[in-house]
Image (cartoon, one colour):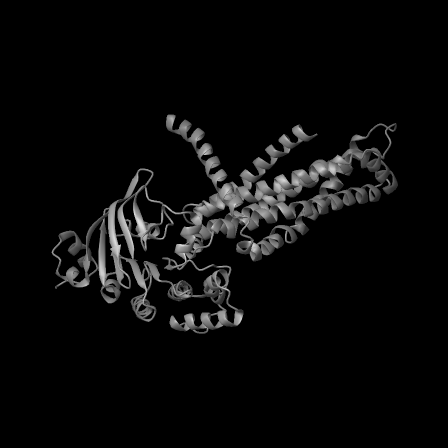
Length: 254
Length: 246
């Protein structure tokens, strides 16, 4: 029992220490651009371009569902239908665009990063990189984290446009709200800070998902089982820290 | 010259190395032998600074590699070529790109020059024609040979081999031994071979160091190994069925 309690308290502290140490070394390797230049481009394609279709699909359905549900809740004929636009657009820009993209990236990109690095660790490929005299953190982790930070906002912008478009289209086709009313509502309640807040979230989420997944993969132990464990932990931990960051950012910036 | 002095290493409660002392002279081939789990690979990883000792020193050409900056350690590592137990080829790259990787990373060679050096290295390990193949398309022995080509691409002064023949059939093992021997002769490198394969030791090494229960139990030349009456060493050697009946 005491051992279990000790493990419960000490393990997260130990992990946080190692995560901080890894980040410190990664920041130190950022100026070595030549080390990761080629890898950075590949990672930006993996994180950004390859994730675009699934992110857009999820965003389109999120926007559409938000429109249908808002319409369903508007039972009073006194409330103008344009209110649907004023709810769907901020929902996408403030929350859904970033969080839906974040969850998809945590599952798709986070798991992939952990599996790749974990396999490289257990097959001694990371040791081989180090043994050659190359900085493995600079070569493997820095480009992945930078790709996450750069490409997440791109995916977020696409998700917002597609989500809002999807909501507008479904509202129009389903006869819930006309395009004109939808746009009027969106304009009336638009706050210029909303997309800025969304972009801040993206930078934080992009950093969390890639850095946590790199950490889990880089320190994988054991064989195939260890890789599987690291992959699952990367996706779960990314989602949990993403939700925590979402709350902290909303509470401090809104 | 590489020198290991009073090296201690534990992983949590498990004591692996208990005061190892070792000296590897320029140009010689040293075999570090011992049973599985005796700490041979851990010792090898200390020699290249992949593991930090709990206490003790590892010096390469007189430089304590645990007392220098990471940038300096990386510069020292560029003098080493390492053949890992499983080859550790980058599975996302072709054989050509694996061998070309250190050349592209650490030299300013043109692609034409890189192409020439890679082909030379692949010929040296008797694998011309595999350059387009991915590691997953190669057998275990071929993977080790491509990894060997990668390890020697930069013409290192030191080559470390971690269990170079483990998991290979006797014929492929002999081929690998011959390659190690010819590389030592051609490149005049200092070689450290971690192995429990006594056939390899007797074929390629000038000296042997026997690690037993985390300690340097015995060290000497191959001739002295034959003559030794140390019971633990003899039991280990006999278990390899080489000197039975001698």
